[in-house]
Amino acid sequence: GAVFDEASGFVDVYRGRHYGKIYPPIKVKRRSGENGKRRMKWKYKDCDEATKRATTLTLRYIPGHYQPLLPELTKIAEKRLDKNGRRSRSIKLDTRPSLEDILSALEKWKVLYVVTDGRA
Image (tube, rainbow, N blue to C red; front, side, top):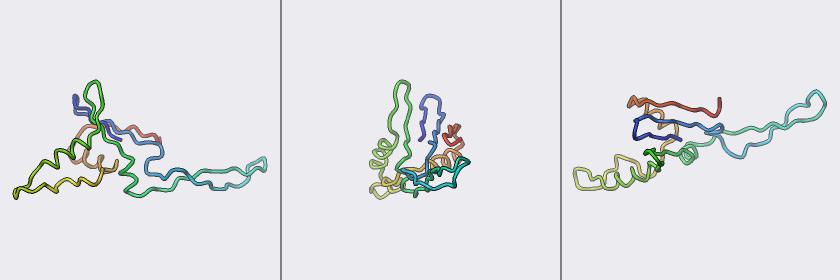
């Protein structure tokens, strides 16, 4: 997920250890160890793009508390009218960003951010 700090303009990005993987993992048999016992290994499969979007949180930090970011953007987008007086379709209201989408936008707009990666 990503936390946008309103006071500093900085963004903290947190990537979970199993981000982009399907839960629960599947069991994979391993060869016998030195003592002759079979050991089980767990393997995570990659998830689809929709799952990545569904599991990515975006929050706005205002000193003292956190707020979900997307519901507010949705309200703003719904109120925005195009030049013909219709609701604007420039922002997709039916999709949430994946972590990759967020990182790409931060790079594009040269926003300072740091990634804390649980996989490391």
